[in-house]
Length: 386
Image (cartoon, rainbow, N blue to C red; front, side):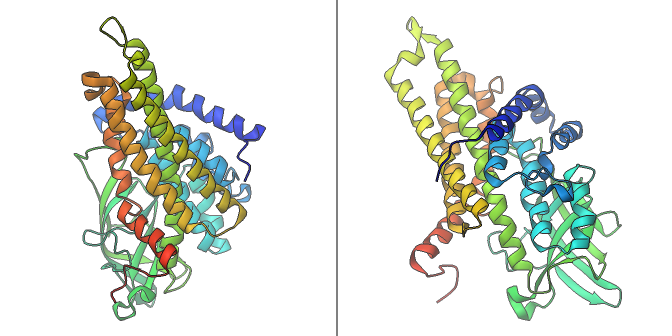
């Protein structure tokens, strides 16, 4: 593996960094304070081509490989995880699922609108009583003469209040367990689809998060991704892509913590000299730097495997597990370096700390990632009762 970036990758990375500094960073604190989903900023992100980064150009995307996509997501994540979430959901979950599982007609209909940001999409897997146990969906889909009717509820759905199309996972036959799951492309512009904003979150306050109720929501017969029984595979393949994006964004948080802490430590003086001259402070900075580089290499390895078409579920879980936990540690350490100044939002590390905590929970908790890794090591699925 040669991780020397080519000229195009370096240019894309630098462009994403400049865009983040010029457009995202300056809005991040106020958007967070106001719990404002910045639609105008989302439009600017779409104009950069980031909402369809890995989608081929023939469908309106940027046609980037996963490694280059990871560079973009890292830079956006360094600026604001709320905006990184928009890219992750739109690109890694919604577009990636349609790209892999959709018919040609579905790709032509949905992907161009999603890539340009004209439409936003959401990924409706999690339910009020169903998180890690993704196969145990209580949302039901009933076949009718005109297609399908869906009833149920979804929870913690990013972009759910602004989405034009929702990927909704539903059980068509409870007796079939995961073999009865299906994924539907649902038009949200109908009375039975009712999202409600979720407020008072610890972090990601500038992201859009919804609880969704589905009351006799009608779905056309040609609006299914794959076939009945493919729903679980659709979800797992999308999560493989989503976990990569979350991990790359967390590398951005790690990098942001390092940069902010180094700058502050060189400026802040105690006992007549900069705190950067103290050995224990340098030790904290070194720890953050090591974790940042290690997380980045694990993300790049996962991206390289995806780009070569090699199996990568385990390596993606390793990257997601390490990068998210490293980002939590880096954010906590960055606040320690900043002292009392890190406890208020005058510095970005306070927001990093709140935003990063959820990354060890969604798209598979750290414990689920360990079970995936353990299954690969032993050949034993610890989630299946013996």
